[in-house]
Length: 314
Image (cartoon, rainbow, N blue to C red; front, top):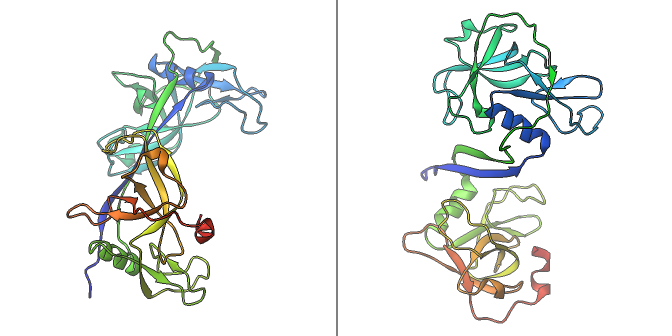
């Protein structure tokens, strides 16, 4: 029985966004240890604030300050915190309705154990020592005995040096284990070959294979070696340098239909100025020593493929 392939895989994308007046005021307020919500047309105060009423879709701009104390409306215990979570020790995820607000804010509660947490318990914000204008300026919530007496008050939303943009790091860590079809594909790549699988019904060859035909829905087992040469069917020019990727911009990323395949795969185009890459360009893989997949594809010098030869693979 062949070895089962597996490998750690990280999908990470730091999302950068600009802030409108409502979100800017909310995050800047957190930096200043002030919690702001937004008031709807029917008088409800939403925390965290949104720019449009979720019921009527009306634009919202009237800001209101609420208290830093509140009530837990529901919770779940987290016994094993993960990387970059707010606390390194076990904690409770909580929804807290701050005094003066009509909706609940999701955050964490620092508690010694699940027996110390209950719906309806009173809590208050513990502020982070260093604040930058992010939801993490609230380090966590902590138990606090008090009565819910505070009301919301109008606020202009004006602060010195307002926060106008944020970067949200999105990351997914998991272990990837390919199935039979993709294991065969990856093993072939380690030998500098590319294999797909042919559908017994429509006879199309899919690369990379998935073990079933995406069109007919039937299992595929017949292996077919394709390429190594292929045709650029479409492409894009990348002008933004990716974090931890040692490739200078601009560069070209393309869909490449390998000879004998009925599905285009992704690959970087090199060995040619980026502004000379074109649809129909004939390319071949370039392998680096010890690599398990092509580093990039380069022009073969052949005449461009006729459009009719690849139009169904765009």
